[in-house]
Length: 61
Image (cartoon, rainbow, N blue to C red):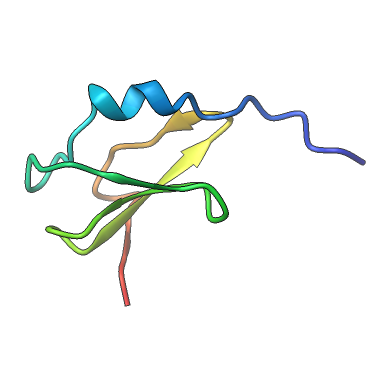
């Protein structure tokens, strides 16, 4: 079975910031996450859509 999930559009990074720190995000394509180094959080990307909710973010190790 192949994954037909929509891809994340990297142009969205220009408009998105971390909801906690209001700083820039990094895109991790392998993990499908947006990383906030300033807040030490990783926000998931599901079906090509970033989930920018702190309750859904995982802490960085």
